[in-house]
Image (cartoon, rainbow, N blue to C red; front, side):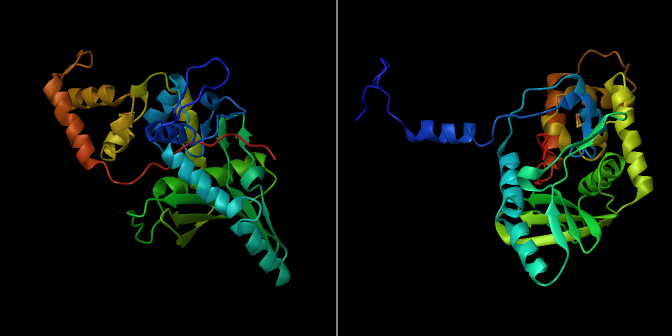
Length: 291
Ligand code: SF4
């Protein structure tokens, strides 16, 4: 039975719908960005459509996390928080006589920023093992995803970009990364890929970030999301802009065409949705952290 709150407020009865909404509203901790995210291209963004990344810097939208972000945080914590997988493994390896440390993991994660190029990364940590430092990147994946023995290109790019920034402004000089995928429905289904540092690819990724910063308008950059099939476009703020631009190119319409008929835009929406994969987004940003 509802009772007065005792503070002069109306009696309140908690419903299950209210409680569910409250749980969802509190899935993610409040933003704790310690740096201006619009000023840098981060590791989680470097593999995304470059035009979309540009727009996120020029027209930042309110964002407070989502279920995929919460899932990622949970998995990372399971690995990297005190008493987690990494700590248990470290204890075992040390007992076997290895010189081993997991560093900058979990609550000790650090954001590295190259101010000159305005690029940043927050590695999931480093494994120091018998004299070598290995860069760590952890990804939770939807159980419907079949990697077929190949890591996602955007995650490989994230590792290369992260190692490059670490070389530029960090203390460690990793020459390879371990990219760890964990099935979000079965934590025993873990797959690790080795990503060898490729300085040529890393330099190209830094150039890509600089190109994004320097672009004056969306059309200065490629519509990579559309070219890749439209999966990224479904929720993108620029989707109408890019579709109209594409149709103008295809049909020879002038660039200043104001709009397309609603039925054509609707049909294009359907096409993009049909082509969208069932793959969940793994591009959620991370708060800057300091150790
Ligand atoms: S609509 Fe697609 S192609 Fe255009 S900016 Fe967004 S993700 Fe990129």
